[in-house]
Length: 83
Image (tube, rainbow, N blue to C red; front, side, top):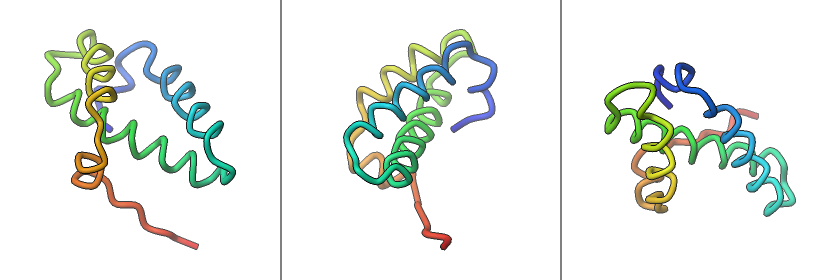
């Protein structure tokens, strides 16, 4: 993610929608939620780097989510099991 994300309207709503999509496609709710948050966080960080400010961020985030690949995700996300 990025500190600019809370300054843009609609990003929490889109995160909820992404979580719902991941939850609908996985029998493990924890794994689905972690995966959704990882994808969204990586896309948010990428979008913020390309953005001119919080008003520009939602469109850049849509583009970053669309451009997401397994390789891009692996380069920006580390998930560690804690229990």
